[in-house]
Amino acid sequence: MTRTWVPPAIPAVASLLLAALWALSVFGGWGQEAFCSGAQPSLDCTDRIASVTVVSWVVALAATGMTGVAWLTRRESLFGVAVAAWLVALAVLFVGGVAAR
Image (cartoon, rainbow, N blue to C red; front, side, top):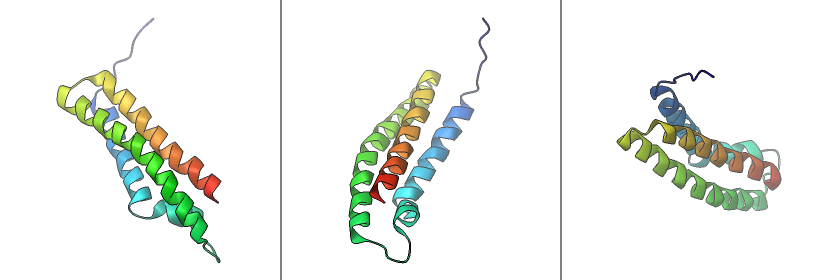
């Protein structure tokens, strides 16, 4: 079995890009625009998206910590975990947004 080596810059950049996507979805209003836009935007939908955002915040906070620790300690294995955590934070937003509709 051969192991392929992935340069640590690749998961680091992926983690930062996923963090930017998450931040734009939460702070830039992309999530609300994607799931609560239309002819009749509902206040209930906006409230549900806000509660989903709180749950996603918890996962994003953990992902931020993992990314920071991986960056400062140069632990390459932790970058993969951080990328997975960012994907989970985005998945929470997406699944919660679909459910909020």
